[in-house]
Image 1 (tube, rainbow, N blue to C red):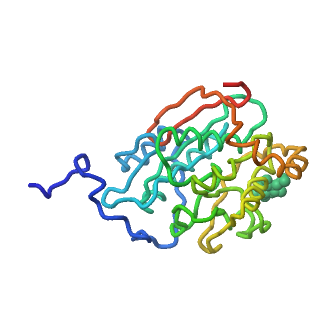
Image 2: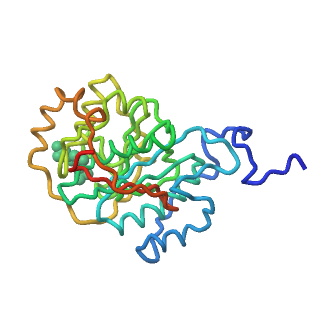
Image 3: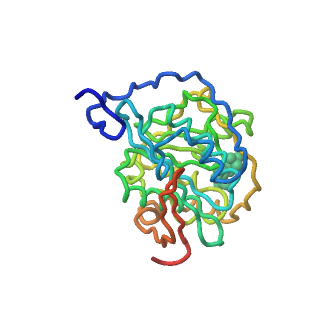
Amino acid sequence: YNNIQTKETKDKNLLTPCPQTPPALNGTMRLLVPAQETLEEVAQQLSWLRFLEGGHQTPLDCQARYKIAIIVPYRNRLANLCSFLLNMHPFLTKQQLDYTIFIIEQFDDGLFNRAMLMNVGFTEALKLHDFDCFFFHDVDLIPENDRNIYSCPDQPRHMSVAIDKFNYRLPYVDLFGGVISMSRTHFQLVNGFSNMFWGWGGEDDDMASRVKAHDLNITRYHPDVARYHMLTHAQQKANPKRYEKLYSGRKRFKTDGLNNLEYRVKALKQLPLFTYLLVDLTSRR
Ligand code: NGS
C-alpha cells in the first residue's frame, strides 16, 4: 500500500515539478458572474475548490514552481470583490500555482492610498510565507486569457497591457498600473511603493520611475495574451498633488517606501476565499 497517497499524506516534496506551461489552457476565460454579490454566495459557487483556506491553494498533483502572493488593495467595492474572487480562483487553479490571495482593506475613511496598502500587503504577507513574487492587483481587473501566466518574472512585469475599457490598447508606454508583478527581491530593492500618494493617480508612475532608476526593465506579455476585462465602479477623485509628488519623487526613493511604512493592523483573518487584513493608514503603530 506504500504507493497509495491521499491529499493529506502526500509529501509535496516528492511531487514532480509542474510543467512550465500548464496543460489544458485554451486561450480563453469565460467571465463568471456571481449569482448574488455576497462572499457567502461566491464561496458556495467555488465549493468545488475543497481545500481553500486563507485564499491559499497548491496544485494537487505536481510541485508548483513559484509561491506567489496576489495583493489586492481594497475599500468599499464588494460587488467587484465578489466577481474578482469568483474568476481569479479558477484562473489561478488552472495555472497550477501555489498562490495566496490577500485583500488589504483600508480601515480609515481618509483618502485612499493604493500604494501604501500594497506596501502593507507585501510586508504582512512575508510574515506568513516566504513568497517568491508578488502580483499587485486592482480588484476591478479580470484576466480574459488563461495563457496570461502568473509566473514569477525575471524583470518587473506589467500584466494589464490590453484592457477592454481602453479598446485593448496600452494608454502610454510607461504605464505600470492595474496589475503588475515583481519578485520579492526587486520590490525590496526599489523600497516598494511611495507612501505619499493619497487619492487617485501617480503612484504607479512613481513605481515605474523607481524600477528604471534601479536599472530594471518593465516587461510585458503580448497584448493578445495580456487582456483584461474591467469591472464597473464609481470613479475616484484624482489627487491634485499627484504631479508634484511624481516629479519630486526621485529624491525620496531611498527614504519613502517599505522602510518608513507606518500602519496599524485592525484585523487579520484567514477566510476561505482570501487572507484579510484591515489596516488603519492614518494612525501610528
Ligand atoms: C495616468 C495616471 C496613472 C494611471 C493612468 C491610467 O494619468 O496613475 O493614468 O489610468 N498618472 C497620473 O495621474 C500622474 S486609467 O486610464 O487606467 O484610469 O494609472
